[in-house]
Every structure is written in C-alpha cells, then in structure tokens.
Length: 458
Image (cartoon, rainbow, N blue to C red; front, side):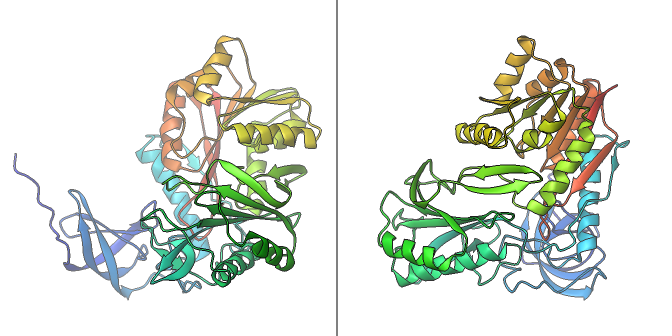
C-alpha cells in the first residue's frame, strides 16, 4: 500500500473557505483535495488566506494571514492581548454566535462520538453580560530579561503574556492581581524560574465571594520562605477592600500543578464564603467552586429540574467536591449521600452541611470508582444519582454501579461534550435513555461549555 502524502507542507500559503469551528474554537476548512486545515482566529463562513505551520497525516494547522471575506458574526475583540493570551479563544465572535457554535459542538459530539442522532440539544443558556464573570484568578510569575513578569500563559506554551486588565475576571480579582504584581516588584520578591527551579513566588491566586465581597489572596511559593512578608501583608490589608484571607501555599516540587499540598495562614481566616442560591459555602484554596456564580445558579436550576425531586427521594452526589450540588438539592430530598476522593473537599462538604444546618446529608471520602460498586454490593439504593465527573468522564464500572442501584434517574453534569456523548452511549446500552441536553455557558469568550442531561430507565 502506498503511503498517503499530505497535499500541503509547512510554509505553504493557501486560500481557504472556512466551513466550521473546531471544539477548540479554531476555524476549520478543507483544501481542494479534501484535506482538513485548522486555523485559529478564522470563523465559519470566511474566505481567508493562511500559511501552513504544522502538517500531520490527516490534518494541518495554519496561521491566519488575511481575511478576504469576513463573517457577519465577526466583532473586534476588546482585549488588547486576546490573540496572544491563552485565556480566551473566541472574543472575536459575537456572543449569540458563540452560543450557537457551542450548541452545534454538543450536537456533533452526540452524533459523531455517541452515535445518538435522536438526542435534542437545546439552545445554550447564556449570560446577559458575558464579561467580568470569573471569581478566581490564577496568575503565574516569572522573569524576562531580568524583570518580574506576571500574566497568563500563551496558548500551548509557558510563555507569560502580561496584561493590565482581564475582561473575564471579576473587577476585584483584577485590581488585586495588579496590586500584588506591583508590590512584588517594589519589594524585590524573587519570582520563580521554572527552568532552574529557583526563585520564590510561583503563582498568585485571588478568589472573590461575589455575594459576600470576601477576598482571598493565595501566594504560592517555591518552599517555605517568603521574604518581606510583613510589608507585603500590611500593604494588602491596607489596599484590598473586603480582604478576608491571606494564605501562603508551599509548593517546592517541580510540577505544572498550580497549588502545593501545604497551606500556611498568614492573615485572617482560612476560608472565604459565598452563596449559591440560599446555600452558604466555605471556600478554601483547594476547594472546587464554579468560577461563574451567575451561571452556576442557572446550571443548578437545570439540575434540579432534571432531577424532578418530590421530597421523598434518596440522592447520591458522585464526584461531589465540596457538596455544592447535593446541598443545593437537599431541601427537596430525604437523604443526600456524597462521594469525593479529595479529603479537603470532603471536609469542606461536611462543614458546609453543618453551616447550613442540613443534617440529612453525609459525605464519604474515597474514589467514586471504588465506593459506588461497594455501596451497590452493600445494598445502598438511590432514587436519583447525580454525576459531575472531571473532563475524562466516568469509568464504565462506575456507570454500571449507578445502573445496578436501579435509580429512577441519573442526572449527568459535564464540562466535556465528547466524554458526555461517549458515556451517554454506554448508559443507553445499559437501558437508560435520554432525550434532551441543556448546555449552559459557564465560560463566555472561551471554547468551553457545560451540559446537563438526564437519563431515565426505559
């Protein structure tokens, strides 16, 4: 068999018609030979001139040179570093078109990956004001030509892109990040160098309680030293309205993970608080908490709708994190069981249940893939099971355990349409059927989309 040779090569310039958007937000077009080319910043419907940058066996990547015919949905991206920063991918696409693109991506995942043509994908629920929504900022620090720099990583790299204002962050996060950056420079606190594993300040994380005004600053350090910490603290306390917590996170390992395992309280409380609906939640540096509080309430309302609780049900919350979804639904259930593998999150979930005086919720620390089959064998049963897995989705043995508990409904929350579609096909094969998927846009200006769906036994 002769080896197929791609019809393009790096450096070659082409004209293309862009026919769609990839799941990463890149424009997708085909050469006259039918060879697929992905081009960042190009939009569906556009006629563009490109230069090929990388060629694989079945596709290529390209750089946009010129827009010869623009999409009517193209807008000017308001962020000055949009094209270099990796935080947003689709600021140049009008927001209604962003929602339509995300709905289409979910639909294609169910058809192509799940083989489920019958599933109805509803229009994505968007935001009235799709800016300044993130309640958490994580900013790496480094050096460039001997000077301290801080910003976000460029797409696909660890090259720091500096910014003076991030348009998807809560304004308080933005102001606090800029203040810390200026103080670090002024106090000559050495930034971390990931190449030689020297320096001190690796990241700064800021979390804001949108409904409470609480602000947490986490200083991630390469070891336990933090020089001039007293001056830094006094300036933060003086300058940051609502400052509730300053924590040093000690992270001495060579790793791309942002946070280390050890926290040292420098000032204030070890947690901040915020609300989802009526539920008050304590948030620690390691807590998983949805970054868009406005859309989180919409997401949880969709979960509540799909769960269809009458007040008589036992609910199991799988991958429960700090217990947020289970606690949100607890007033409509007789019993809530949560399972989570992160000990700190389980501790947070128990504290959150006590703080809200929810006494019929309990939380178990352990791997969901181990605990759920064990519970099933012990005779634990649930009327409704909630699963909100990481991007990799659910292991098949977990889905089998869920099915064997014989629930009325399985409500699945997903941040990855591809693994949701794969797991949907598995559940359909096990006798659980779905009709609708509700996307909720938790991450405007980016290519990410959250989905909620419900499976019922046929």
